[in-house]
Length: 336
Image (cartoon, rainbow, N blue to C red):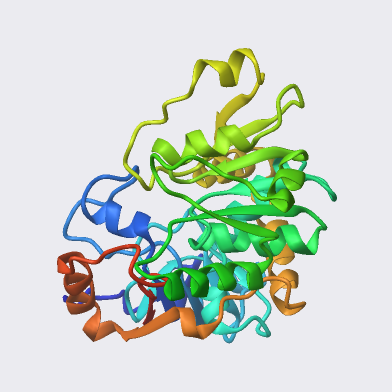
């Protein structure tokens, strides 16, 4: 833990922001390990998402509409790290949001929900169609289930079984509560047996959203419909296994494979609309949260004071956790 001095006086385009909360995402840990694009050279502050409150504004920032008391989230032009109590940065590094979005939701709204929204909207998933989602208990996975439900899109959720039947049913039921029409076990080497409801949903499965790769992606490909312009979009590789595609998925099913990275979308949006698309997306996510269509119960989070974060990260890294043992390790939310 280290102190980073802030400037005594603000630049004309700067704002001073008091950080309220910041999550720990897998990509943040990967960046610390040097395994993620854009990793900062040490010594550096970790974290990429946060919600904060503006406490002071430079003269040009004021002229552009920034005001003390504004609730803001960091956007992708912010590069100073979010696991801190306070920051001074250019006003362009932040987007103002409504204060009626709960702090814990606002802290996590710029990565997982935005990724889920883009996957649905940019691929034109429509009411009545079915999507297949692996890593369903992840932040993006749960957001996909909730946003799909709000749009009348049916969902097949893929999830690893837990260490007992009781624990497995608990996590499967949590996914059904988030909107999954059916939940199927995601198990390597196990023959996929589908009940009648899953088979019926699979007849309209045109999109698969893959965050795992490895054997899980092959199961997903088997669920997608042939000769229906079906698409599997890969946006993660949680298994750390390569994406191996059976030849028949191309020849006999005519499935298209493509990738998605939110950072690339944001960079393109900044070049083409000067960030207007990003701001519209945040406004839409805010509405989904206010309307109750998108939610992250606080029971899925572990509040950690900033001073305790190094120890929390150390314990998480050292823990020999069986990922099938429970609903999952609670997501760390740094309370600054």
